Image (cartoon, rainbow, N blue to C red):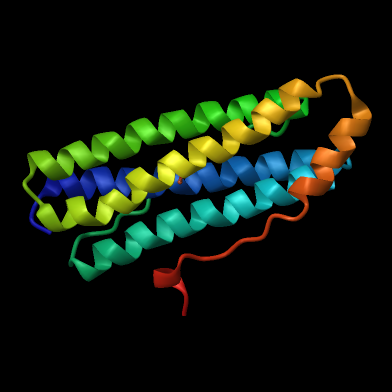
Length: 171
Ligand code: FEO
């Protein structure tokens, strides 16, 4: 990979994905401590997804002979509030990540790196899904706010989520 700017932006994205992983892990721990085990599971799966996003970028950079430089990852908060507040933060964070991905894609265009544009298309699509899954949970939570019985059922539903690595990252 020739473009230093693209390498730098990809390195920043690896950091952003690992921070996302860290953030969702912290949210998962917070939910576990409140006995919201299904929420904790959903967020733990999200943590694994974010780690995969970072590793996929890292492997691509290595394949292209780019210089990978790991950066410091800041500590996330430890308290996130009610389930609605948690998922508002998840959605807000995903909207932020989408902006970062779009910026990274724009750099690949600017630097005329056609291979990177093809590769990054996966992330553009992934963000559509990331936003949709966060919105879906948030909308459900808003509908049942204040109803603990319904919250229990949502918790059970979220307990069923499992992590499946994408086909191209399976060993
Ligand atoms: Fe890696 Fe949730 O974006």
